Length: 160
Image (cartoon, rainbow, N blue to C red; front, side):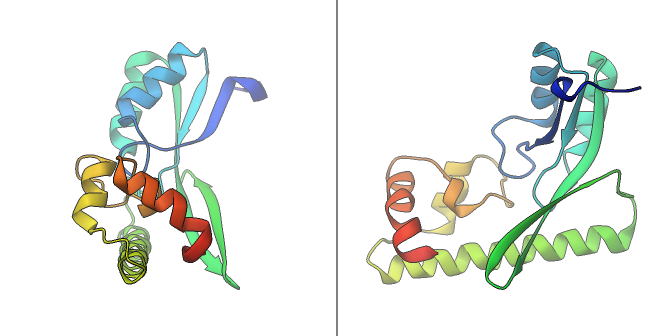
């Protein structure tokens, strides 16, 4: 089926990574917006794909399984969208786990840096601000009072 360019969203995030809505909610919102298709492209995880596929079948919207891969080259963050990968392949899933582990280390380094600059923050605070079980949450996207203000002030000044 051919899709008009304005009838699909091929880059969305769910609570499986740093999105605000569950996979079901993302698909439901896409259907409500009149889209014909929506891709679930969470950061370094395919955990939201099964729920999104079920939602798509129930709501009559095409769900494109995907993932946003994060890497760095020459100090520059690079994000690559991948679609229709074999999400049952053990090696592929291990590689995604490795990317999430790197993200965890990066978050820890950022927390240490903030603390050394007199802005104490803990990983528990970041996870609480990001929402339930958001291991894949990005530190700079946690948003709750003190955390949000600290990160907004510090990101460009000291963390980049």
